Length: 82
Image 1 (cartoon, helix red, strand yellow):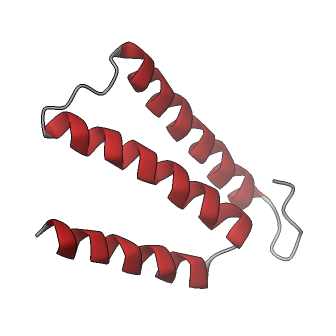
Image 2 (cartoon, helix red, strand yellow; image 1 turned 180 degrees about the horizontal axis):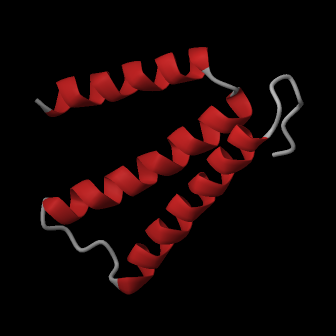
Image 3 (cartoon, one colour; image 1 turned 45 degrees about the vertical axis):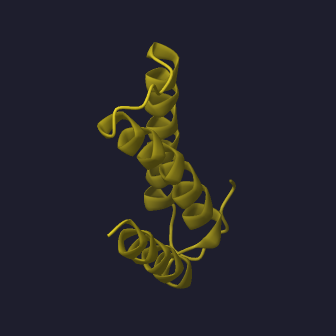
């Protein structure tokens, strides 16, 4: 089951890279991988680092939100400034 889930994640990663702007897709995929790793580790009962890890996840999600918001608000065809 973990292998199948991992392969589904890889497939989603490649589909995302093929269909979106690379300057947006790569940072989002890489940072969300860290967030999901910490969440799954917590669900499995691992020590994820306490308040500092949670603060890091919140900052990561805030950064992803800023990237998406800046991408949505720019006109189509305008180069990204990331």
